[in-house]
Image (cartoon, rainbow, N blue to C red; front, side, top):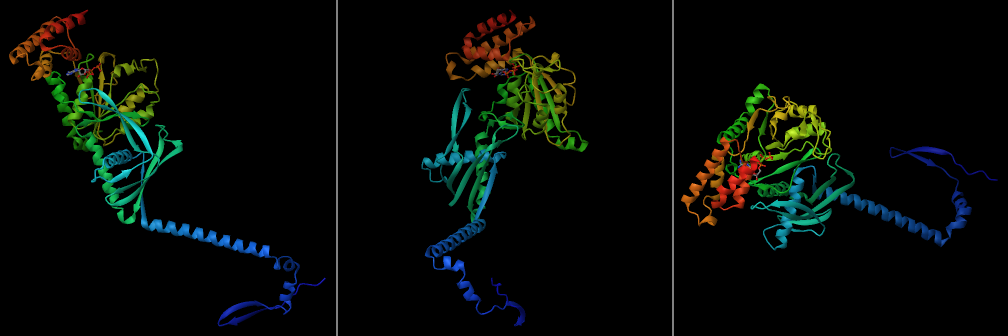
Length: 473
Ligand SMILES: Nc1ncnc2c1ncn2[C@@H]1O[C@H](COP(=O)(O)OP(=O)(O)OP(=O)(O)O)[C@@H](O)[C@H]1O
């Protein structure tokens, strides 16, 4: 048995460097050449080919990793991305903008950016026509996947991704993102593009009333924006409409006044009166006239809790009225029950707390309506929670006459009736309502509206008489 050859170690300074060398006896190479391993593989062509292939593979991997790193670095330098999350308002604006451009470019309009998507999703919406009827709209928007479009001469990649494993806690809607990627030099196009999308969305809402409804803890537009109703078309007793309108206008001018005194900047209104007197119509028309939106809050909604309600009331969209209808039906004797017997988790005290809210500088205007003010708990309508209470009653003689004139005045459809005759009929309607009122019989504005829709002007007085009688029964 031979001992492995070992040589003494020396250290030598070469050109100022310390070099470690091991001195081996001269026969050591031969010893390796004669080893059993060398005998096995040294002359083996398969082994050598394998070694070569392995080297090639390693080389390729290094090259691949290198090119990936290089590409990533290049992308970082050359490309810029913008991520839009579906929690952000611009998300829906951007998708609508893209759908709009796609339809315009498919019609061959040269001025629009080139957009074409092959993976589409549908968003169904309801549109209210000017004549009051509604239609269903199917908006085809870019679906999850990758899309390309050209905007102001720059190519952009749009990637819409949907998170399928988790959803937004409160609304149950999946998380989504849209990532726009373009060349770095075109990064300045992003703000322009987003502004265009916003303007397009605003254009669609111009002259329209947006109704929001609660969706979990968020407010979301409900259906398509509706045509604004002129305030004058809702005929209330003159002093009532003026009082509410002036109060809201005065409140809106006093933000600083509230701030200086540390008073929460909010105001509550309660409109009460019989059904069909125009409470809801007036609130909506008033919102429209001030370019405000409506946030419709249904306290009986399943899943609504005190916490969610508090969050909703503190986070209503800017420039909006929160509208809570038929408040007596919701909190009758402090118990909350819906028509089908469902009791929601909103408690009376939770509702009062949400109305009081935390003192904040944010503006909040709440309108509540009821047909039975006597059923309301005094705690609910104390000042601070409700600042102005107004009775919106059945038709007064003047209201009946004004509504008649609005329906039949200047309408060519009734050209067989002279203006003189119309004036006489208007007078008769007024007198009839006046006479009946004295005897305790009333007619609602909604009933009058229905009557005017169904009858020609000459039949109105007789029809009105019947309605008043039948109401008495
Ligand atoms: N004062 C009014 N002027 C014009 N139209 C009215 C008036 N009151 C009611 N109407 C018409 O009657 C219909 C019902 O009105 P609205 O829903 O506003 O009444 P409401 O007082 O809110 O009723 P409810 O108490 O049942 O909620 C609407 O189509 C509206 O156009």
